[in-house]
Length: 252
Image 1 (cartoon, rainbow, N blue to C red):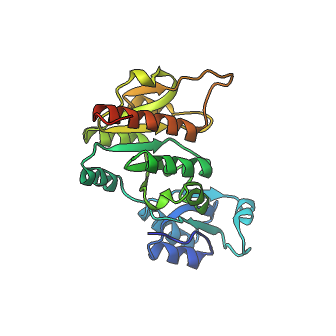
Image 2 (cartoon, helix red, strand yellow):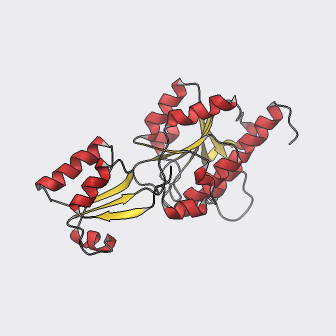
Image 3 (cartoon, rainbow, N blue to C red):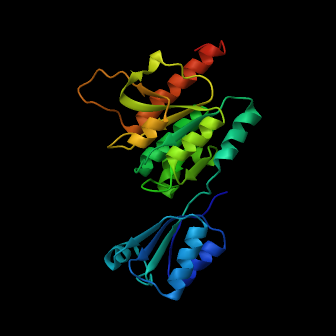
C-alpha cells in the first residue's frame, strides 16, 4: 500500500493522522511542552511505537512549511512497512531459504533506495531497518529504488540485535560486512541467511556485530579502505546469489 508522503503540522492534524492509522516515520515535539493535546499525541505515538524527537522551537521552525506547527510536526511514510513475519512467509511461499538484508543505521536515503533495488534484483525476501537513527521510506528512497520499493518489503524494528536473536531461533544465521572479517569467498553463505550492512561512517555497531555468526570482508585492491554501503550490500548480496546457484547446480 502506498501513502502520499507528507509533513503533518499542528496538534489536531497530527493526532488525527495517528488515529486514522497513518504510518508516522518521525515525530518532532517541542521540548518541555506538557499540555493536554501534546500529551495525547505522545500517548498515540507510544501506542504505535513511534520514536519521539524532542526538539527546540528553532528546529521546528526549520522543519515547518506553514509556520503553524503549534509545537508538533509529524512526517508520514511514503510507503507502508511490512512485518518480518511477512518476509519469512514470502520465502516459504516461494520454497526458498530466507534471505534478508538488515541495515544498521543507514542514514542516506539514496543508499537505502539503492539497497532496496539490489535486494529486489538479488532475490532477497525483505529489508529490515531500525526505527532510530536511520532513513525511512521517503519519496527520495522510492525514487532511488527505481520502483523496487513496490515489490520488496521493508520492515522497521525497535531493536536490530533482538530481531537478529529472534530470527536465529527461526533457523537463520547472520553475516555482517566488516573489513576485519573473513574473506567472503571463504565463507559458506548458503542456507537461511541475514546479511547485515553497517552505517556509512561507523560500520556495523558492536552489539549487532557480536550478535552475528560471521563477519565477511570484501577483497579490495585500491588506495581507499572501504566501499559505499550500498555497493558493499550489492557485492555481498551477489556472492550469496552465486553460492546459492552453485549449490543448486545452476550455471553461474
